[in-house]
Length: 102
Image (cartoon, rainbow, N blue to C red; front, side):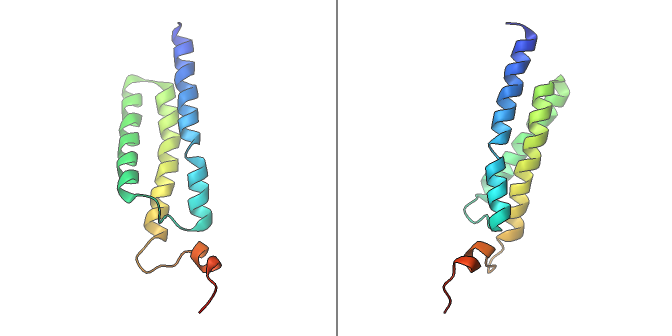
């Protein structure tokens, strides 16, 4: 297998795992709720992705750099939404829309 085909596999894998976060980001920002999102998991995920990005930069891997740059942006968006929308006592837009009144 050539180095180009190996890099292509890495780029495809990176694209797919990166795109997997898009529906979550869209859902959280549209609903203005991240109640069911684990803060601890997304904190660890962001640190891990940042480290993969640093590793990619250090070894000069375009696939790792591209995938982890975009993934870090997407997971950071979910983390920001978690911190912004899910403060104690705050009612989300989805909960307000679904309420039937007193």
